[in-house]
Image (cartoon, rainbow, N blue to C red):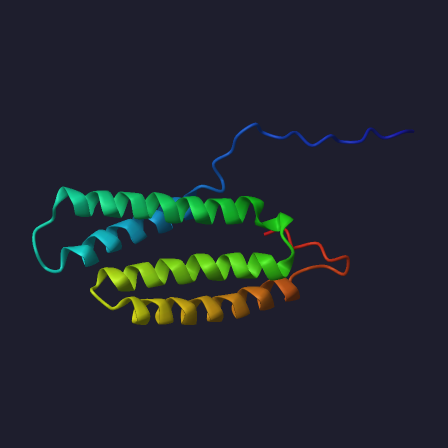
Length: 134
């Protein structure tokens, strides 16, 4: 007796990958607006700064999570490290720190994140070099 092959059905749009970028983006935007206040009253410009920061970071996380598997593990780790370093350096610069110290802190965070992401991607791929399905 012949068995029929099951054909997987793809949904045209799913929200299963949107929760994490949105939550991280909102928290980042709120923190950016709070750091930019410097103890004073909240202004409309600070709220716009927080909103734009949240959208940019959430968009970057979404793009890397959605399309990052197409990159080799080295470039994928570099992309995650760059996103992390830019985000941390930007937040530190909002506190009034100098450009040099903000860049140094961002580079330090980026370097640690590149190493950790590379280790994760290297240890979680199969023998054929395909990334793990997470």
